[in-house]
Length: 251
Ligand code: SF4
Image 1 (cartoon, rainbow, N blue to C red):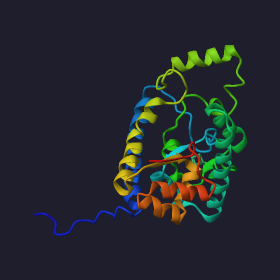
Image 2 (cartoon, helix red, strand yellow; image 1 turned 90 degrees about the horizontal axis):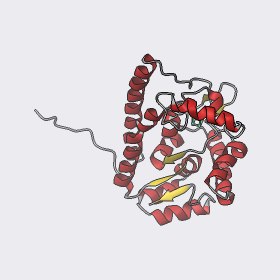
Image 3 (cartoon, rainbow, N blue to C red; image 1 turned 90 degrees about the vertical axis):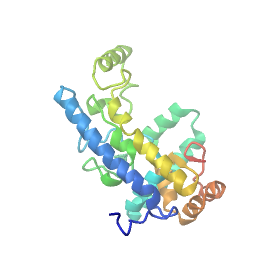
Image 4 (cartoon, rainbow, N blue to C red; image 1 turned 120 degrees about the vertical axis):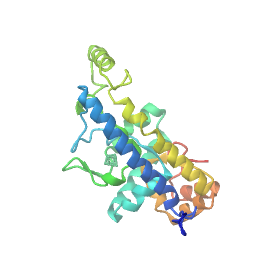
């Protein structure tokens, strides 16, 4: 017999309409990545990431607004202020960097670590609300190889040896030391975010993690997004000094 009542779906304008599918996709990813990793370790593979390791937390991070909403809801007021400061530094970098390489390098050296990193313990202070990129980045080499400047400071000989070592390490894509299948397994999370945003808002918003998380806490920006008004959302971001093509994509 069919149930008399069904659990109502959240209304399209509710943040839950976009965050719930992403949360479900995070949970699925966690299970699948755990299974894959167990098999990889059983065959002798190595994963060097773990609690207290944070060398990749100074990288630029791209997210969907659906993911940013999850982080935004978890932030303390102090963390939100630190996010806005970080977002402004990212925007300044985007306005002045000559190319992507310079953007990434300056991000790592000058803007430096994510405000959610607890520098004393090396832990993420909002682990459950971290975005996809922080969930699917795993290293098959020791942390030293993820640190800013390691590659640049290698001699040519050391770089050649690194390439050879990567090529013979299972789980990598043969070019860099990150574990490729664990990254590929997260593709459904991106797809879930894309589909949920399109369905709820009729548009998608992607961009820099700290910029989008700051904008996700701006009621005027979110009202425009929820109304499907991409131009209005861009204008609101611009009025906050947070609109730049590198850090905010609405469409
Ligand atoms: S959200 Fe957490 S895991 Fe991701 S960069 Fe920030 S501190 Fe690191």
